Length: 87
Image (cartoon, helix red, strand yellow):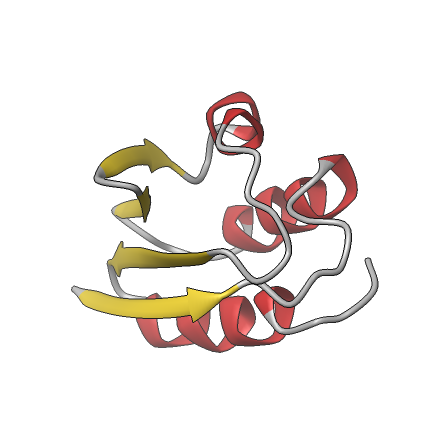
């Protein structure tokens, strides 16, 4: 399992378009779990509704836990996604 902290760089926050990109990217990977942690709450990142309900805003700090055979690839993907300025 890998846990990593992020600061969201997407200027409009984690809205529908980046959430869709998140779902599409995670679907391609062999992962056992993908958890988003913010304000002591956890959600499954493979659920677009749960992820959208967090309403993460620009520069929000949160953590991600991923586990499975492709966990390193998942972190590389998330590094790019969460640090993209405009989505």
